[in-house]
Image (cartoon, rainbow, N blue to C red; front, top):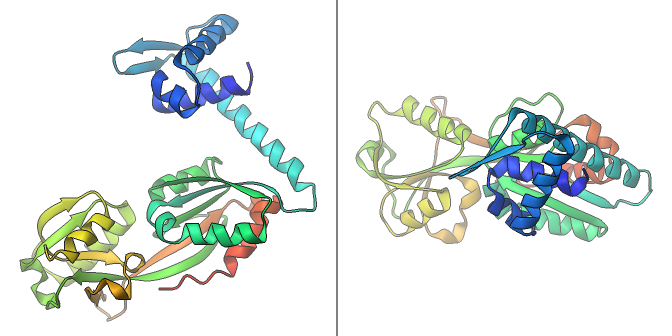
Length: 288
């Protein structure tokens, strides 16, 4: 059982599909099947069963997967610790970030960091903020950048505060919102709650949702074409959008704020790459 076996087991357990596993690991389906069969012979247990949807792991198979994941973590940790013994900042930064932050802010940040530390490579994953939090908690990522208010007991840096806006193509009266067509989009739980709490605190009537889309960028496109209003965070908005923007205020007249934080476990500050990125991000100004 070697590192390739560990990778196959982890990926197969994640997606439950041999075809997808082979694509992700850039190997062939027969090679994946061969290695699984060899492992079943080595441990003299059945690891998976096949069905129409993919594969199902046996209880013994799950035990072997947990061992494989543990070995991958230990192997990665050893490599990082060995690199950290050197004086130069080099190695891999394992980073998870929210999708919206990754689109609008992360490329520029990583480009500037790379110019300063050219020997650093990046292993970046993007997704919902909930997924970023889990990735850091489970040590898949050394550093996470997430949006919303998450309780985290170790290191946290506030990167950005942004306002939430009612956005429309033409100026509107905010008191008319319950009677105007709203464009709703799927987003993470924390932003949904922030917007819903604001709405409930301001209006008795529910919103008149006429269009549902899968993300906030698509929602903005619909707004730009005059199909309704949307409630969007400032990270999406630019002065040259030519859109009407009304900041959302709470009952005390304060702005509704969406926070973006960087989180990491304190132990990773012993890693020279992570420590360099941590110090770099403390000086980044991303205010909206």
